[in-house]
Amino acid sequence: MKLQRPIGTYDLIPEETALWAALESRVRAMFHAYHYGEIRTPIFEYTELFARGVGESSDIVSKEMYTFLDRGERSLTLRPEGTAGVVRAYIENGLAQKTPGAVKLWYFAPMFRYERKQKGRYRQHVQYGCEVFGSDGPDIDLEILLMLHQFYTSLGLTELNLKLNSVGTPECRPAYREKLVAYVTPFVDELCEDCRRRLEVNPMRMFDCKNETCQRILHEAPKLIDHLDDDSRGHFERLREGLDEYGVPYQIDPHLVRGLDYYTKTAFEMSYAPLGSQGVLMGGGRYDGLVSQLGGPETPGIGFGAGMERLILILNETGKTIQTGDALDLFLVCMGDRANRKSNEILLNLRADKICCERDFTGKSMRKQFQAADKLGARFVLMLGDDEIDRKKLVLKNLKDGTQAEFDWTPDLSQLKSAIRDNGV
RNA sequence: GUGGCUGUAGCUCAGCGGUAGAGCACUGGAUUGUGGCUCCAGUGGCCGUGGGUUCAAAUCCCAUCAGCCACCCCA
Image 1 (cartoon, chains in turn blue, yellow):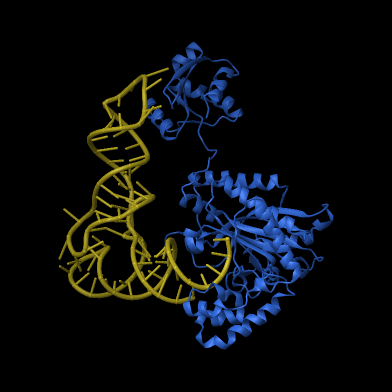
Image 2 (tube, chains in turn red, green):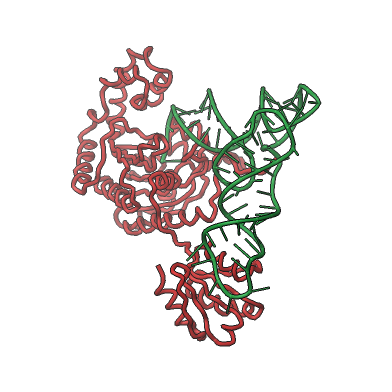
């Protein structure tokens, strides 16, 4: 039996990690600019945290968790999403007491869900996201959406769709739910199998059904957005005004529910429509009851999670390219044993100045060394042979334009280094 | 979890009962002090895995593993 990676996982090889590293540093820079602090929580938690935090009725908890018993018979679960663990850490570390005002946290971390593998959907995937605690006003909702809009725009992704909804509060939602169920129940025999199930589990999901009969029945059904309490409605209107004022395009989607049970008021999602179900690259919302539900003080919260794999998929799909930092500055071509022995004198010096250098380790001819330098995309070749050693000179060739220049071989290599820098880009 | 399609060289794929192939990539040479272009040669395969049918299976059948697509749902 050949060894294979587990289902739904992937390897990142160097040509891919360069892009990942570049994107990760942009994520980091974004969160820094908005003054978020990074938080790292365990990859696994006690199962109960997710069961209580994410919600027993959610698909994530009911059928997608990687759960196992450790040697002490404790039930542990590989985290399926970021929020629950961060909330737990926020409470456990008393972060509310350590910072004035709202506490802003971000993460970049692997998540695990036992799902059928598909393109853009993995059993281990990476999400970057944030959680903000202690602010119940719409200003922070707005800042998060402005941040995301700015970030994706800076990556050249302008064809994204921001969908927005308010799912109200635990005070007004049950009343609405009853109205919806009461409206639909007389038609239950006409509903498709899925919707009959949804009617029991999560009635609002019925709005997403593609079945024509179901759509017809639901067309006249009461909408949550028309049954919000005053507080939720005001919050939602303020947020919309802010988005309009700063020119962030969005569309109201009264059917946007999101799969996790903890959301209140603001819910949002960003997607790239041509990719269908895999086009959702970010989802989030407000969860004002979650902290207290997990044993902390009454604290409002809001956050989002965004998929790295989906981001890369959409960048590829739309032909966007991102500058990566893996370019090779210089390839040292060595000729002969004396040059070989001398090579480290130069390489140590250049590398100490963070100049990315490579050389041959396989005994290639000079011609082959040049070919290798070219294939590796080196900007320069530095030649080192008996002639250079005897004359105390170094010959630098620019592989982009083919020009060549000679430098004095001084101990600090300053001339050479400035040539490499100046000819750069 | 449900339904469909596909697994042949590192990659993209042809071959579809009768001696495993091409392009690209990789290695060497033409070219032992100068890359890209060109030419020549070479390395590389349990034809996903296991079983069955057959004189003979990469090819047909079954199972299994994995990938892709749709659904469910999500990042």
